[in-house]
Image (cartoon, rainbow, N blue to C red; front, side, top):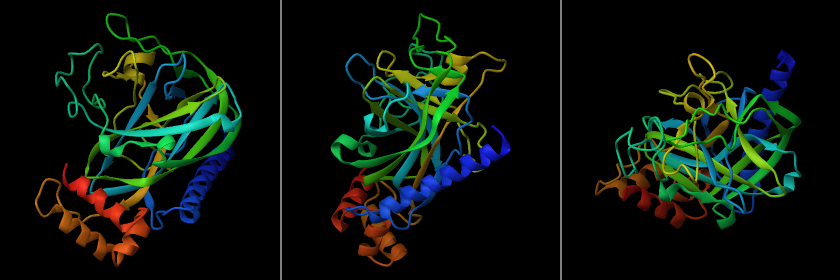
Length: 327
């Protein structure tokens, strides 16, 4: 893109994040009022779109996931994802969003052998299954979302939709070629914020589009560049569909693999929330008491903490830290 186009796109992204935070502030339910940017991979690089869709009639569930790192206990209250709706369709046809978070393999996985599945490797992949307590779904009202059109006509030269193959087939399908559609940003508010200890995780959003369209998660530069924020130990993005699960394939190294060395991709997303640096340690007997005391001190009382972090009530905050401490 030309320099003025890059600057304009950056402004649009920052404006979009501001709109998400304003929506969270003035929505009818509790909203995170002191949220800060926790993770950002920056703007799309225009190189690739990877399918990430909810299952529906005649369509396989397909999941695209990218990693992030938390250096301390964190409450995640919101997110943004940028993607391509292809083919173009009315934005009202975007009817649901679900978010799952995953640990890194071999956690939450049946077989710790990285070469045991039907893929070249599972090293540095997402786990077999998601973190149960971190799933949020618009249809269950555990998240809200708003869609914003960034570009009515946007194209990528590479995509991965159906070219997801397991052994003994060759996974290097080179993807599904170019894709064109509408570039959109989806702002997500978690009505029940997600509480996680420090760790290395994967973020996996899925979008349900009716009327024939699909959501292709757009790639972002790797390594991350401004306005994104570098992630220590940043890993490449992975993908799977329900035929491949519980295994995953690397989008660049395993599927596209059309250069030497093979390309690698990040995906375009951000996370907002609050750090809780003095939270207790999960599994320890005093975890809950330490954590509640910490947030009360950090925000000036439990009522203020509830409002700042986006919980619906003090009881919801208490319940979240109870589940956190029982991990």
